[in-house]
Amino acid sequence: MTRYSRQISLPEIGEGGQEKLHKARVLIVGAGGLGSPAALYLAGAGVGTIGLADDDTVGISNLQRQVLYTENEVGQLKVHCAAQRLRALNGNIEVNVYPFRLNRENARRLIADYDIVVDGCDNFSTRYLISDSCSALHKPYVYGAIQGFEGQVSVFCYGDRPKTYRDLFPDETATLQMPAPDNSVIGVTPAVVGSVEASETLKLICGYGEVLAGKLWTVDLRTMQSFVLLL
Image 1 (cartoon, one colour):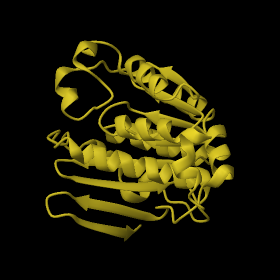
Image 2 (cartoon, rainbow, N blue to C red):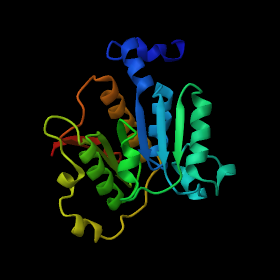
Image 3 (cartoon, rainbow, N blue to C red):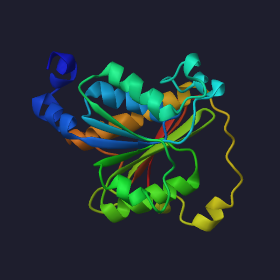
């Protein structure tokens, strides 16, 4: 347990919490800007099984913010590169790779094998699909989104009166018809938001603190203003 001694010494975690982390199964959908820091910190914390779902390859423009990857991996599948890096970071965990997109045919089957789903994706349709699947399967969904210098995080499908992504964006038809969001972003924005997603995931697993269920955390890194809004 020396590896995890700095967190085991926290009363909120302890050896019992570390055992919960070892037994936990977390699926990260999207291995890009948000998925990179989330995966690294969850692997470092000792989450026993991490699944990575993404059909994309590493591009040179990814390297400004997707810190799992290196220049010599450009053109390779992200999930394979990410799995190699996570296994090198922590040889005591299992990393499963799914080099495909979630769709209505595979989403529930894949999510059913995991305890928690972490959002690393970048589009509305996948988020609706994850949220609907997690709601049906009673699995917590740790949502995160970024643009420019701003980000937000919430925990859907969890708690006594669970909220879903549809509570944030009720009109799916109108949302899907919106113009594609501007993909401009400073590299530290996904680092901050992905790390907060990892933090919420650790809280869910170990059972400490106040989870962002029924709440939306927002941050603007230009002003360092941060708010928690009730949903």
